[in-house]
Structures are given as structure tokens and as C-alpha cells.
Image (tube, rainbow, N blue to C red; front, side):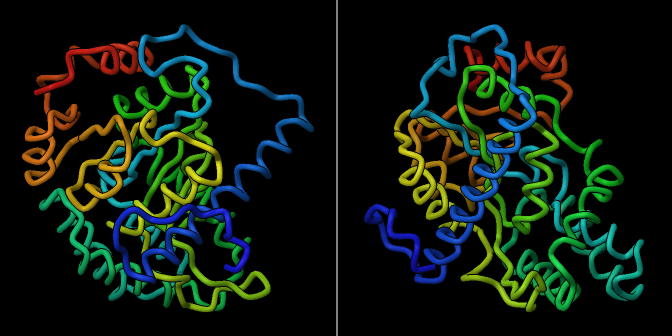
Length: 306
């Protein structure tokens, strides 16, 4: 991690492991983004600009958007869906699947990320992938996305991300899920890249350890701050989206914080600070979703507060 000298001084306290996790996530995201940009140049592919909404501001290359993944972009937790896919491929036994199933059921009922449950899930995942090649898990991850994740993307949130892309802005996922899984999802959705938990690998093989800690809570804010410094972004012009009060540190970094499908604590916090909110879990917003692109423009232009 010695090559991360481009970081700016932090404006608030954070644990050393949070900082390390954030730096590792930012570095991984930048490497992936650069590689994909180079591949696009070689193949001659490019995105066509769509109609420009009033917000985000079109052409503002110092603005970007950061989206939490679990229950913000996708229903449920990515790591649990990934675990189901690995079980199907006989990576572990039935009793471990039962453990994953219970964690997923708890997540659905609670609707929020609990650090203890999420840590338990990540520990399980690390023990499962230890000794496997990174390339192998990336290939399997593509299949698992099609099997368990593609149909769980919230159309409304996807439209919001597309509105930023159509304005010429970069969009990153920021998640506690493994960076490899997050990168696959970001690529499938046409996003710029992903910040995620970085698992240690040596010579392309997972060691079963993390770099720093899971990208959760304060570590997400560290990752966003690090990436913004590296990419010369103005955080006051950036937007962030999340469902969880655990992401208040990340949301507080940017000039345009949004609460998506918010838990009770985040809803209360957002209302107190006049942040914008959107809930795709209820039928009362169905009429406003409509065509995804229109939903993104309409939601961002106004009429957001609940």
C-alpha cells in the first residue's frame, strides 16, 4: 500500500484499519477503471449521450456519484447471493448454506445492515474462497450475477445512476461486498467501477485474509475520500446514495446526499438535515417509476422529499 501517496489528509478520525480498507478499495477501483477505459479505446466502443437532465449537471467532470449496493441498488445482500451460487457449485456443505440462508432471511426481515451479521457472512466467505484463484471466482461471479442478482436490481435506483452517466459523470458502487463481485455488478450495469472489500491474494490466490477491514461504515467514507483525491473530484459537487444509517459518514462527505429505501435511523437523520429521500419498496411510488430513464430524470429534478 506504499504507492497510495496521493491521499489527502483526512478531516475526521478513523481507525487505521478503516483507512487501509478505504485505500485498498480506492486503488482497486482505479486500476479496474483504467483497465476498462483502455479496453474501450482498443475496441472503439463509447457511450452515446442521452437527453441532459437539469440535475446532475451535464459536463461537470469534477462531479461523480457513489451508490451503496445492498438494498440500495439491489434487493438483498450481494455476498449472500454469491454464497448461494458457490453452494450450487459445491464450494461448501449444506450446513454452511443454512447459515447463509439464515443471514439472508434476517437481512430481508430487518432491512438493514448489522455489522455483526455482515462480519459473520464475510468470515464465512473468506474461509470458502481461501486457496482458490481470483480469476476462477471472477468467472463464477459472472454466472452468479445472471442467476441470482440481475433480477434483483431496483429499476428506480438504476435509473438514477443512468442519469449521472448520461450527464457525463462517473458512477461507482461502494459496498462491503468483495470488490470482485462489486466490479462484476458495476460492469453489468454500465457503471464506471466499484469500491469494495479487498481480500488479500498472493500470486492470484486468495489467502483467506482481508486488506484492512470490510468496507463498511467509516471505511466507505475513507474509500470515497481517497478516490475523490485521486480522480480530482470535488466532493461538494458529488452525490451519494444509500439505504443504511451505517453509511451516514459517506453520505455526509458529499454535497448531494440521498437516502434510498432508508432504514428508520437514516430516514430520521435525512429529514433532520433536509436530505432527499426515495423509497422503491412501496407501491405508492410505482406510478412515478415508469420508464427507467424518465424515472431517473424526474426523481433527480424534483419532488423527492417524502
